[in-house]
Length: 115
Length: 114
Image (cartoon, rainbow over all chains, first blue to last red; front, side, top):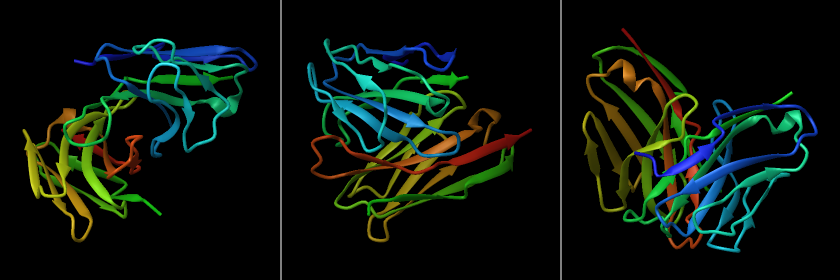
């Protein structure tokens, strides 16, 4: 049973609109992540957070921004959506280091289409 | 450069047959290797996690093997079912990363036909 939730599951929006993708987890995990995934391609890290008030950019440059005001909530915002932002966005959380005892859980994703 | 390569890119098998997916990696220093199953339009779900000292790990009909010397892993699926149709992703993490750095393969797209 997933303990990390993303909304919406699907979003079709016009160019220039501001959008926020929601991600919440109930596991009390400190670390949270946003990944971008295009069809048939690997996941790319775009943002991560070590905890409240901590946010960092990932490996893949993204025009999106994130915030972490509460442990359980890690929303991603696009101020002005463009067709190039069309992709699947996956949120994940983990207890800490990626040793075998530390869970790393993904949400179901948001499929974003910008027209 | 830390990389994870998977083969084949796609695979079609008949229901009830077995199959093996491959993963080669260059991530160093190695911490652990995970196999995930990702259904279309969903997030990845963990199947197995293996550390340097583990050679094999099973989860039902899924059996993963790891050869840390040759930096290769395989995922064997036994008696395939239609519900096994999905992308299978190999993910490797490096040791000592405070971020929890993961390196992802592009996945093998498995299709099981009736």
